[in-house]
Image: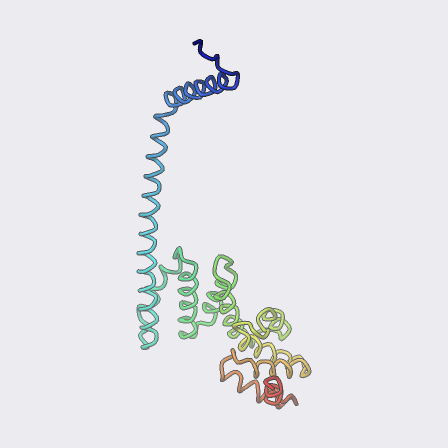
Length: 232
C-alpha cells in the first residue's frame, strides 16, 4: 500500500522545525560561550550585592549603636567626646542618621552658648533636601527659636507658615512663635484664634497648651470653652 503523501501543512511544519533546530544550533555555536559568561557574571554581581547589603546592615547597626551611646552620654551630662563620636555620622549614607547627628551637633553648640554655630548647623539641616522632611522641619523650628529676637515678626510668620497649622507635628512650637509674632505686629485678632487652636490640639505638648490657654484668655478667646464645645 502506497504511503500517503504528507499534506502541505505537515510538510511546512517539518520544514519549520528543521529550520528552528538549525537556527538554535548556530545560535549555540556563536553565542553559547558568551551566555555562560553572562550567567556567571550575573551570579557574581548578585553575590556582590548580597555582600554589600550585609555590609550596609552591619554598618547601620554600628552607626545606631554610636548614636544611642552618644545620646546616653548627653542624658547623663557627659558631653565630652560626644562631638567626636557624632561628627563621622554627619556624613553617613543613612539620611536619618545624618540628620540626627547634625541636629545633635547643633544642640551641643546651643549648650555651649555658641548661637552662631548652632544657627548654622540647624540651617544646614533645614535646607538639605536629601534629609527626611520631619528632621528638616524640626531644624527650622529650632533655628527660628534661636534667631527669634533678631528677626522681623513678618519674617517669622512667613518662615513658619507651613508648620503653624493644626495637625503638623511642630504645630505647638511653630504656632506659638507665629502667634507672638502676630502680637508684635499688633494683630491680636489673628493671635487669639491661633493660641486657641494650639490649646485644643491634643498633639501639642501640655506645657505649650497651658500657655496657649492663658494667652488666648488674655486676648478674649476662651480656648477651654471652645475645646469643650467641640467635644460635645
